Image (cartoon, rainbow, N blue to C red; front, side, top):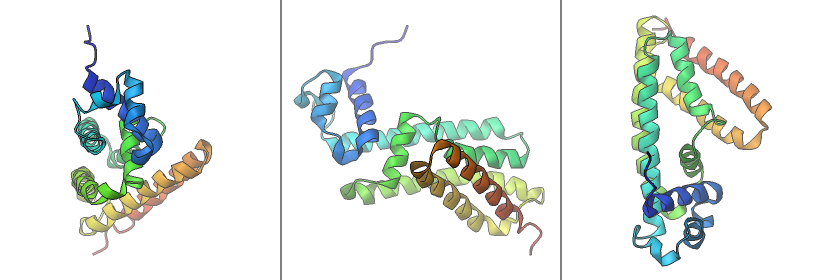
Length: 201
């Protein structure tokens, strides 16, 4: 039998939803308190400030996404390399099935609160480095099979991120059908770019 969430957990869940929908500036502590059914000063019994609540949520969401990513890497390690690369691509671009936490993270990456930009950039870069280790591992296996040029690792990973980050923006612009069409076109281009340097010295 699951236990009732604590007030602190309820605050986090309400804040996550509001930060995702309205951004840092648009989410008021008074509205978060109202959603939980408490008075605004009660939030300070659990979190020192709106800023601390926001940063803690980002760090928890990053940890949760990394956990999912590690599980994906383990789950797919016996699959053909092309399928592994596609599943990595889908992990970043399947934007219709992401959690509220992932939506919050992606929104914040695109539009970070100005006064937290430098601090968050450090968190995001650490996270990207951890994600890149998984991409590099797949790239190395593919290079061993002659699919990729391992000497081009840095460039190939950069191309990967340009593709998935561009789709994150396009998802905000296009209807679902057009977005999915564009996504498949980008995937085909990404695979061509990754494989075209194989065999080059």
